[in-house]
Length: 493
Image (cartoon, rainbow, N blue to C red; front, side, top):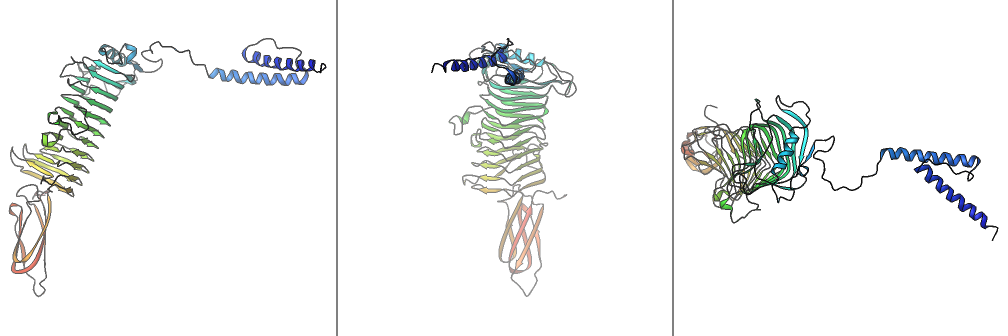
């Protein structure tokens, strides 16, 4: 037993020396221990240790340990990036104090950052600079504007902006209008507003876009406006997508619905699009007074038609060029003044919601209302109606209203089919219950079918007055008369 102790001690010493050797080789260049290894065994161990050390050093040159925790404010813009944090400029993310000056300073610094040439002539490319709200709620007392015109490729995103109690009632929380001109066709280009909640606090509007090009408003929630949730004026190609707008935050059946006011989206420009947007409270959901705008996937359940509200109002007499597709008009309908080149299809109208043509100059031309569904409450409400208080429609051409699916409402269209049978020499078919326009039939097709086999009676179309078709034969016979009429094409077509 005593003879074995030195050997055990020797082995233990060798193990400790090996551990020391590894630690020294990895963490420091100290003299190697001598006498513990010899010959080929020593050389082999040396090569292994050196290889291990080299691999560790190469790994360590790439990966660094994280810095110690720091609670100092983040820099206003991260080095090498163009991301500007409003909290670094002193903005209060709790919304308890006024953050106007801090947000204005952040916008100003982002607008003066590095540039990458130009977009449209006169529009500086800010390279995708981002102003991030860091998920906070910021109270402001005046509109947020860009410091100068002629800016592009800039984003504001990621938080909530709330109007203070002294915010101007005619202002907009985010105002993309220029205080001075840049002598260019457009003030701004490719400005993106994303992932924002804008609370107007019943003082003015949410977003104003004036004379701008290719503006994106994505995933925004805009509430408590009194004027417009979003106003687009001039310019073109403003895209409003995946957003929610309402004067009052409600999910329908609101006891104060009769008092809803304001307009959720006001398009006073051309070539814009509203896609997959919900409008849950306002007097008017979308007002359109520009040309070539597209509305798709819009759900309007703002102030009901029965309370005086309108889902979509097309207010550009004689030059509409609007396409409304795949929308959900929920107890609130569509009004079009003197529509020209208007297309409404694949929409669902619920709760007696209907389409109204309002005569201003008596024009309705190039209108398609096809393949929609209407659902009502069996009160005899017509799916398409005319408002001719300012005079009758006189210029009617290329109007197609047909193939609409109707339940609990009264179908109206420009194409009608009917039949009548009897033993007579005259057959009258009244199409007024179906035809939209009074005393207007431009085309008639009819078929007379009789069981008489021993003679071939003569028959003819005698009259189309007052939306009634009269067919006569030279002799009385038992017959069925089928009629197809069309109001939509003028007699000169």
